[in-house]
Length: 354
Image (cartoon, rainbow, N blue to C red; front, side):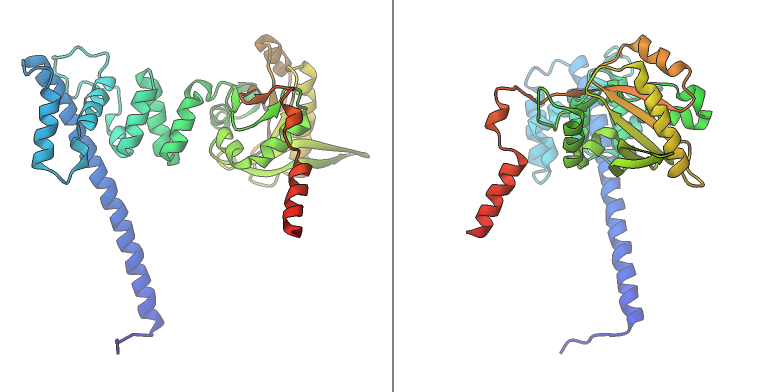
């Protein structure tokens, strides 16, 4: 018979030891990753230097891979493919430096240490898909900041987040305190890309809203970090009249409500006035002590930049104007061939009854 201690204090102690050991394992894995990537970086530098200073031939990388794999058969990182990745990775971040002139440590204006803080697969995806060093550094920093998986990272790169982040037209600098306006500006994008929706060509605003809610997880990913969904068609009563706003979120980094108004059409100046009204109502009816001023975001099919800037110039509530792009639009002639939600539900109920 096994000896077993039933004392709760012992069980709690075991639980604490388990958690402590798991944390140690995580820290050890991170440390191993960093040391491995530092080795890769130095190896890349030496490969480039040897190719520049010697005449070892075009098969140099093949032999290097064979020799290292023979010496360390249990290590997967010495395949010819990975050796080439290591060389290209190093060259990417040294692309504007003359080969052969003190290659190592020539990057005083670049935080190379950040490269060692993300997995190797993330590093490969970034340098293969990015064209410039600033763009790559943006994705490296945000991977560290938000803990992006490789799939999320690739999605953000392919949707050109670097070129869209913080680009929304807004009046934040005039309507928000400095500590809030910069962060608010960085939070919004232009355009937003809804490549996860399949819409018919003549969709209306309510259909767009429903599709976004049906795909709320992907919608939140596109909105960015810190957005918490609060509801759609949120009711507002002002005086004796009833109103509703399309979408309401709470931004945990900004500590404020964010009102989103969807427009199928191009931006019109009156949209800003309507949003000003909504923001005022949310501030009055939802905002609590500790909340920062509510922000509005008008999402429209397209906009004239000058018209948008004019429209915001005398608005006293903080708001931004961004376009959205739908990449999966169904041609009208295909729409009738697709089942409606009601059709799908009816078929599902038939199966249950059988």
